Length: 204
Image 1 (cartoon, one colour):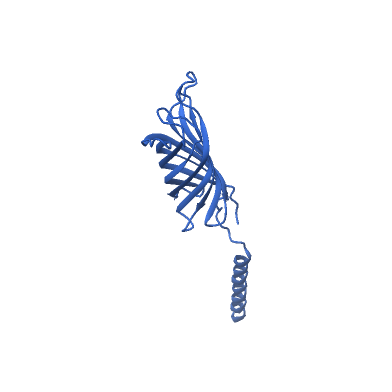
Image 2 (cartoon, one colour):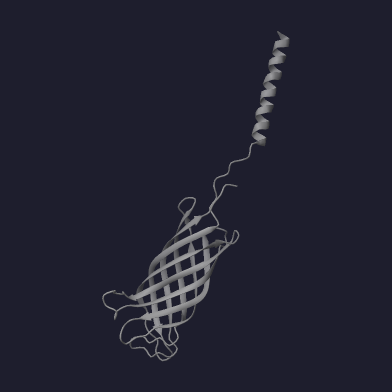
C-alpha cells in the first residue's frame, strides 16, 4: 500500500513538472498591435482671413477639410503628408465664374509628449488660392501650420481626434475681391474633429 502511494505521488509530481515546463516554453500570445502606417481625415470650421500689404481683411467662417497619411517614427513621433483646404465660395460645374478656396499641401510631424493621447503638429509646405470670380485671380506661396489635438481610442486601430490649429502663408500675386494684390496672404484658425486609422499591424 505504501509503495502504491509513493508511486502515485511520483506520477503526480511528474505531471505537474510536465505542465509547468509546457507553460514555460509556450510563447506568450500578445494582442495584435496597431500598425506603423496611419491615415486620417478631419473636418470642421476654419476662421479664415485674406489680407495684403495694403489691406487687412476680416475673418469669415469656412468649411475646412484635410487628409493625412504617413508613418510612425518611434514611440513619440510620426511624420506624414497633409492635404487640406478651406472653401470660401462653393464651386459650380455649371457656372465657371463662381468658386473661391484656399488649399495647401504640407509635410507634417506629430510629436506625442506623453507617448499617447495628446500631440502637437507642425508643418511646412505650399499654399494655393483659387478664385473663379471675374474680379479675382489665382496665386501660390509658402505656408506653415501648427496645431494640437488629443486622440481618444475607439478600439485597436481607430482614434477620434479633436483638433485646434493655426495656419498661415503667402499667396503670391493673387487678387481677392476688393483687396489689393500686393503681398497677398492668408491666415486661418481651425476647430475640427478627425478620425485616425492605424494599419499594418502584426503579432509580436
